[in-house]
Length: 236
Image (tube, rainbow, N blue to C red; front, side, top):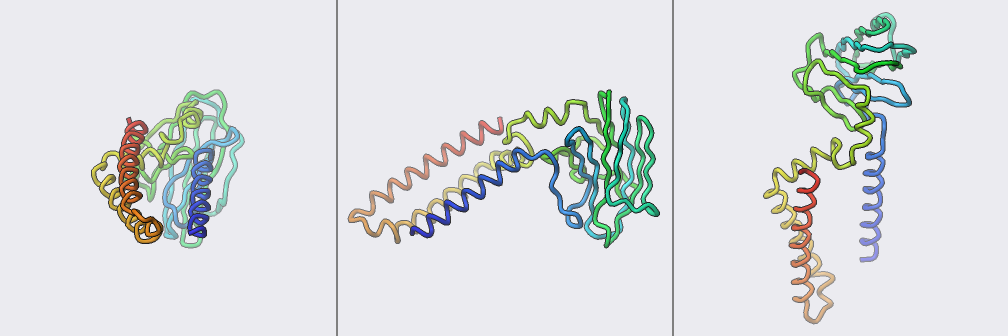
């Protein structure tokens, strides 16, 4: 039992560290060649625009415009013969192709004196019908329209959000709460399994093992009630 307890502590510690890292990250983590779509974020005063495909021939084209001044752009994994970019003071136009051997491309740029940045992004020369292919900010927010704008303080506002109201946590908690009957039935069944395992192992030592079993079921009900109100607080 001591080994099992230690394993649980180690697992909980890793999960806690993962949550803290995700809650504090500023950039975007994606897997080139496995992730698919656009990834946009801000870091150290620079705007990053990158894209990745699932090892298939895919074209990425787009226009980025602003009311400010664009400067100091830098290309990432750019193939000069196949990829094209045109940068002016207030607009960036690009066209790039990924292949089975070219997993991702992108660029970064600095911008000054602006109120907004407008994005018009396409995949295979077509507007993405699935806006989940466009990921904005460290928590992968999806735009509501094909042509969308980011205000000057957008990334600052994202950083100010509590971790539970950011993606993907916000969607996860919302799904748990919106399907609360299934969620709580699942938790209750899982709790019964745990209690029954304890009954035939740990509680077997007790002379009146019915008492710890009853206490365990009371604790399970209390946990369910607490989870309900926690989810309600996080979602509402």
